[in-house]
Amino acid sequence: MMIDLRSDTVTKPTQAMRRAMAEAEVGDDVYGEDPTINRLEAVSAELFGREAALFVPSGTMGNQIAVKLHTQPGQEILCEEHAHLLDWEMGTVASFGGCIPRAVAGDKGVLTWERMQQAISPKLYFRAQTSLAWVENTHNMAGGIVTPVAELEKIWEGAKSAGLRTHCDGARIFNAATALGADVRTLTQGFDTVMFCLSKGLGAPVGSMLLGSREAMERARAVRKALGGGLRQAGLLAAAGLVALEESPALLAQDHAHARSLAEAVAACAGASVDLGRVQTNIVIFELNGERNSAWLIAALKAEGVLASAIGPKTVRLVTHRDVTAIECEEAARLLTRLLS
Image (cartoon, rainbow, N blue to C red; front, side, top):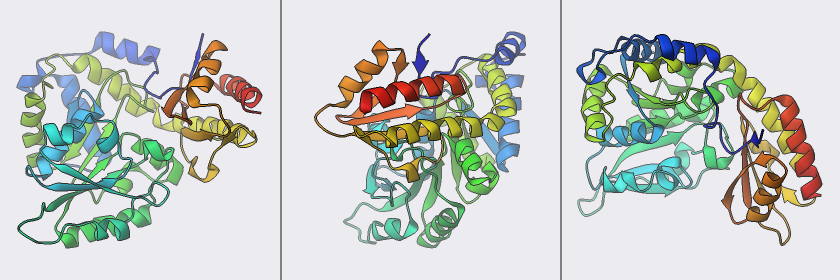
């Protein structure tokens, strides 16, 4: 068996999820008649203190629906310079949403209102206007770093004063809540819409949720259909999502501890550099020192039973999750130490 640290999307459904999927009551969700989908949407909305929620196949779809809800073609979206929206959604914000991402450098990956405010387009008829403020929490390409509540409150207040809509790409918002000792409702209450993934740290096989007002989710349902997101008897997937929401949040602290142990092992090696201050959740990103590149390390790790991701010529990412045990992380740490010393 390989020790798979490429992503927290590689988890397999638990036995409880498989049973729930096998026994799920289903209907046609395009008609709004799948009872398990309806229950998942109701549970999610209640958890986040929202009027309504919408099941979507992926986080990218949820994010792109939010773009359509809050913008008009030709407008700008403020986002961090390495946001998932910008780097990993295949330009759909432009090709489908018709919008321009305005990249803003974060403070070690944390997007602050002070920096966002400076990037708002002036109110000139010959300039593309800023419409939406976008926050990714946790921030994947910043090493899973968390935006603290105090900074979120500044963004919510500032965006409202500036007349901007707000969206949270909360693919790993439950990891953020675990790291901050807060609840997801507190971390997202000031956003107009929120997306979170069931299929990352929570371990479900498929799916994400988009949350907002009832009126916004009614419009979102139409956009989802336009993107090919009408899934018919999707209760089979929703059943696993319900189990994930019930059993997985309590396990995330363990993933964070495993990531920390891996990061500390890497930090002790002469062959790599890692900012331990950024290792706050379940992601470890580090740079290779010297002449060797990330392709070499990925191949060397794989040859000895560990999978990792190269996200740059000399940059490597490790992600912990429920399917990697403490013993396996210790084994991976020993291997990294041997290869990087």
